[in-house]
Image 1 (spheres, rainbow, N blue to C red):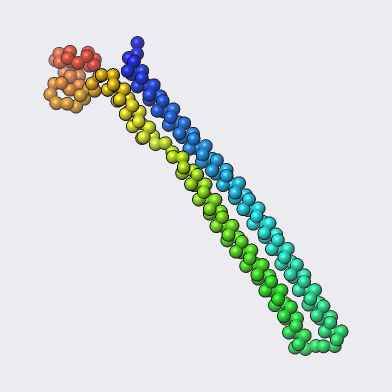
Image 2: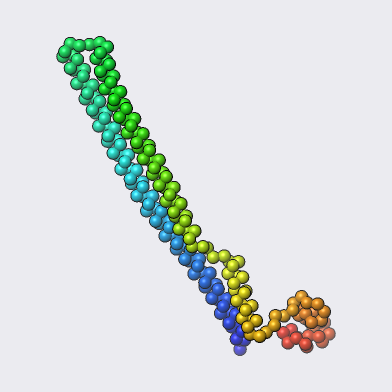
Length: 195
């Protein structure tokens, strides 16, 4: 029959292992949930970026079309009026310059928007890591020490004394075991020594 003290110690050890496994599963589930949330946020940011890039491309195309139309009108109007030379070239250059400025502004706005999205992505990564760090990973060493501490508490509460493994003289468990093995008869004092 099993000693009840050892049965309680075994139950506490099993409880410690189960607790470690539960904490590990909780930390793993939390990490997966944080990563899934981050991926969802990344997808939303990427969709916003694609939409903004599409809008910017459409605006640039509209500006180019408007420039071409204004240049054509200016050229036709100058030709119909019989005007030529430097003044017509200056008017047409101003139209082209205005279109280029508008396209540059659209490009700068898109780049600024993309930088903002990059900062938001950094924030997503930081929040995900923070969520993961909120649930601590269990320590195998910590679990082992907790099990050992619980087992020693049960052993002490049972009223038993810990064996003196490395004491001095003839009373320590190691010396008794060695003398019992040599047939010196000292082992009879300690019932824990196998004869």
